[in-house]
Image 1 (cartoon, rainbow, N blue to C red):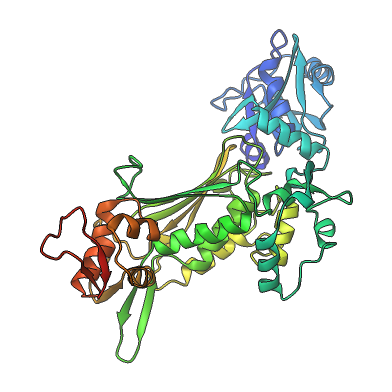
Image 2 (image 1 turned 180 degrees about the horizontal axis):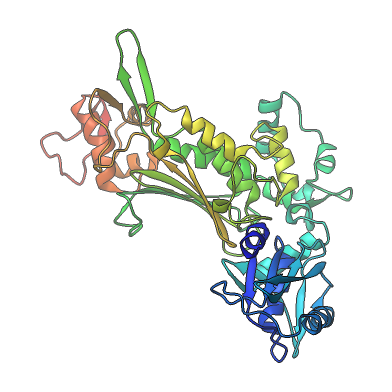
Length: 463
């Protein structure tokens, strides 16, 4: 019976006895369960699941009920069930996920809301309490009206993208009907996030291409790094471009055709970035989305864990429910065909990656979440376990587009610093190895002072 109760409980805590002198020890779990996805407290069972039983289950049940009513506000839904297990009495307290969050523990001059982190109940940070308040009042951060007047800002990128992707013009009335502004002309947070100007500080994406398999110093170990801030569409476009520009497309020659072998599925990357932008928690001050690329993988990390439900690594991706933290933004991105309305983004990441040539089950994308963040890991399908990319029968096409752009830029003589700035590569050795030297060796660029290759006045020009 105990194993069945544990299996059926969303979350579960064990208590050998009912603590009445310091009831906060278990009441904080009641608060956390109600603020989360529900759970059960089982009294009369040790932490190691050994049944010790309760001496007076009826009195304990009355005490539990009384203390919850006195010290948890608002009152959560709960059920007390006495059971006989191994001829010993136990008591199961089942707490339902609440709708009028946050549920506070209040006593001893303290008023605190609790949440679950792993198998512990901890005091909720301020940003989590704020999110619980919005949830309890059936509101979302992106729908809140701000004091920013729409007339003070422009929306050129939003309107142009909407026209391009839908074939429809973004009419003035759409700002109100889509939830970007109210009838008095004040922007919602969603509207601020889609303005051309950077007016939501947390609307940022930090991108880094690391040299190797781990993070290091941004100055010594980063082959490329960028910071983007502002409009969500701008962040999506530039985040996607950063991944594309720091990835490779290999190809295998067959008898009458060739097979392209990209490191990552472009659609899977887009889905992961859209998921990060739409479902992230914008309430967390000083936060941003991080895109970290390594030799063997790509990681996209966003602030805010699962809005409702278990950690994603404990869920079946095919059945996980879609609960949107920012429904206004999600609806607009759906209208622009960046995403599916019914939350199939994670499944799309899996299915699109599985289509890549060379894919195996070991390369399946992975998803992780904590109460404070969400992370997607995409595996480089062209990376092998020996620490090098596959070379046999594969010809590598390295950044053809960027090399062509660089050659065109050098129609007039340019310094190395000017070339690096133009192409957006911070690391000098990476630029020389990947771009400058190959273009010189191919005869596409030439030095203006060929007799003094290391001259401080050296420039490069299209051959």
